[in-house]
Image (cartoon, rainbow, N blue to C red; front, side, top):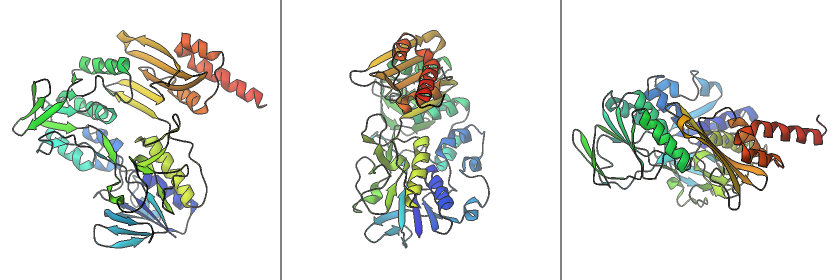
Length: 419
């Protein structure tokens, strides 16, 4: 039995290790297209602030880890998948056959249609090579323009601020992290960053980038910015182009069922590339977050090894540290039609809590500057527990989530004969 995993990120590595635990004999191959050992993109900001070196980003720190587990890591790019023949064509010119295949190719940065986006001095922040290029230019005092204040952009923001650059963030939406925070919380994060010396321009777009020393960044409001470095963090898209002509069903990502199987026999998909069940909405979506990537890797590998596991759906969850201000969002944080909400705001202390209900269940939440109950909020959403009278108490005081959790957990345990 030959298991092949396309993609050397967290999903692929977790899947390979899970397969090896379940199957001591089969051949396992990871194919990755970067000239690096398998690494975590989430560790790149720590590299940018010199907390770690490049080896510190590696997913497994022990030398010989993959060889010790009899996992082959091959550096190549898959050019074509032929499920009917169970065959892969590689960019190097060779072909390789598989018995079970996992597509874990992740995402790639999306370049906005801006003239000059390919100019020297304009970079994404996605690969280790991107990080090396950025570190050369992002010296103390360097003028840096960061395009995008989403989740990825806000992570990069912190590293650039730590490098003491002269940083300006340009975000086309009316607030920071618009896919994670509402207008109130996103506006507070913007104010927090500005208090820390970072310039943030919301409802603003980059129209063109002109080469030079420094570069000139033209904005849609008629203003210009001088820049020694421009970083584009304007979103990502699943890596599915190589599947064209394969017959594997795709939409935004690779469509998978609750066992993470694709439309092709013995082919699975997991992580940022997989369009799977959403826990909150019941729709099929892509969730490009590391917890989902790891969960997918384990579940897909179990099913590849013949140990059936069902995926209950991706829970949308994000936790972000922006210059020391912790924000989080879970589930249907933006609310549901016909639902109720409770909100607590202390703008002067940068504290915010928003709970979203459907009937008497908590279905979503977002918070700012409040970290003590994050796990409890996630638990209430995932268990879909009925809050009954506790809903009204939380509507009056959202901070009582721990009490609500304990009251309802003990009630469930009592009804089950546990206590």
